[in-house]
Length: 381
Image (tube, rainbow, N blue to C red):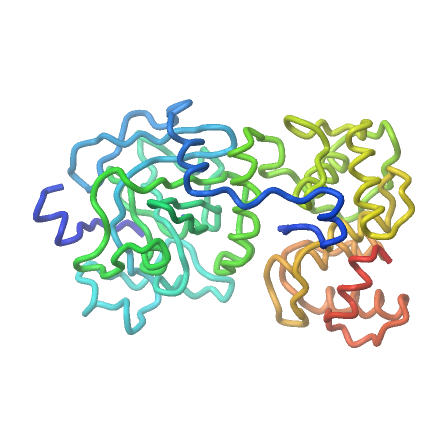
């Protein structure tokens, strides 16, 4: 869907995974704090490489002053923010509250319904044109973005497509979280004061899962601030996770390096090497020690299981979805060779694999991943 809008205020002037390791791991090596607004602003202060063939206006028909740039692992621009209320109608977002209201968005939720602008923080990308094609930059619905305004950082997803000539739109909820007036008639903010920092290849699963956007966004933002590229979009989803000994190389090693780093265990400076070198073996040993596993430096099934399940431990069961379900599916593929599709959707196949795992580990085989099952996963059993 393409929308053309300006807030009244702007008419008058014509003018948006993995988490920290356990306390025992933190004692070995504490993960870095989430990137601050100041750090993210500094990281994208310069347009390292201009991706767009020209520039965009803050509004359709406005002066074109905003380039789309690429820096490190991010695609970014600095613009104003117009308020988007499009999608499912609600008490806050409807034809009465928003003169430009459209009851649809370019992408839908996992239930095939349109997004809800006053519940989900999302941003709008310009429509495909000769100026710029977001698809060519590996950006799509659900791509995670860090949106920065003043001292606040909010993680959002790409949720809609707007005019081909303008840039700088965010959902009602995004504006609200940033401290910007979210009223679609009178709200928004003028001037190039909002940084939109997108991470190609990094997606929230499903698109409406804000927790997934936050988890994956903070990891990608840390990569940007640290000048790292290698873990953005790195494949960590495998039907089977091979045992890795010293000297091993390939995509699975790179995945292990990225997951180790996401949990606060450095595998060395720069991008992941994809080789199980001395620095990686040392990180593996530290992780294994923190989890009470034999400190061999090799990544076996137990180490994979503990690594891939690391993070928060919400109860998930049939019908659940999101980042935690993805971690369960990865851990099952490592622990019992479940060969699940890692889609973040807890369905019959995942339920069956959980029951198999629970039975083999002496747990009640109810198919529900609760405190006890998470504990066994994260112990590498």
